[in-house]
Length: 350
Picture 1 (cartoon, rainbow, N blue to C red):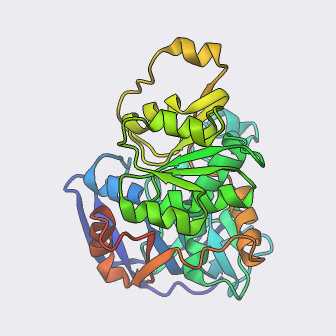
Picture 2 (picture 1 turned 180 degrees about the horizontal axis):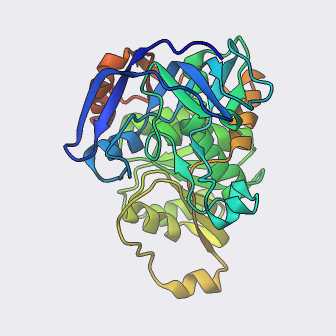
């Protein structure tokens, strides 16, 4: 294991004062089964913004945010197989708790208290980060670090939501509400798996135009009064097979539920603290419809995306709207929240 280089710069969020400051902190040392990575890129996500504004909570008094990251292996702890310093990697943004009943029985993917990077433990808005070795995905030399980083949420979350949770199949219709950082990739993923038609919904005209640019078949302003009628017309009178809320708002979820047909599935990818009200429950029963919650992705999804992007089956080269130094991360969060320039993803390069 390489010698610890001493101190590093990291963005530290104080959960009591809700203050984010970039400061000098000790470089972490990897323990058994852990790897230290020199961070090359880390995305700024709306969930990071929700941590900073208090709508999402961290159990730690002070934490380093950042869960969409890539870099170079710098040091390995005891008992780490295969991985060596110098390897280029993307990092999955979470880990099993290793304490719950499922983890104790060796069923780590079914962990009951999954730990989120940048919330439950320090993330990658820093020069170095320590992660379990099994969080690493090797990335090819031709894949830029900025693109590899955003795979670990902005792409992986909608990918897992559509491919696994919604079980989206070729020629099935899909509606996507919210064409931001997740929604843009959801459009591309839906097209990659052969969904048809792909309908995109956003109140922002620029976002609707972007949805068409990235592969949607039709776009809608969700505020129009006859939206359900238009959706059913566009789907041959059948309604959507899959409707996805990528925003995280009950109004979006309720509207999406009105647009699905028989056996349709509504998937909640965007997270909201609002109570859920979806309308008459009898319709879900009579129509055999489903309402599905979704969180994040599994490590296999990140591995699959590295392959898909690395072999150019999926193109995320247009997804990094800007990069910035770590010192400017607070300004980056502000730009994302205010939608300055309508960014897809802003990426910190420590």
